[in-house]
Image 1 (cartoon, rainbow, N blue to C red):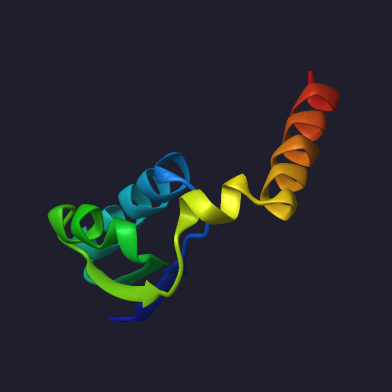
Image 2: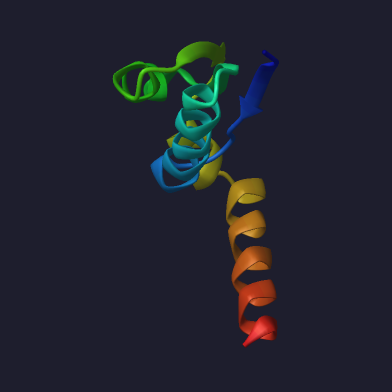
Amino acid sequence: MSSILIICLGSRGDVVPYAAIGQALQARGHRVRVAAFENFRQLVGEMGLEYAPIHGDSRALLAAGAGQALGEAGQKWWADQT
């Protein structure tokens, strides 16, 4: 059995898919902990996974200039792939 830490920085839309991967890994016998912003503590727990806090607030990060630039870069990358 492996111990796996999944680090999720971002919004709920970022956390849920990685937590689902964590559930699949856990079902295969691995110990999984998800590190995410504190506002996702309950969500991670409801998905049956261990939680590790990342201090801060994802909404504040995404609203800040650096978060907006990251989102724009992701949108550009996605547009370039199609």
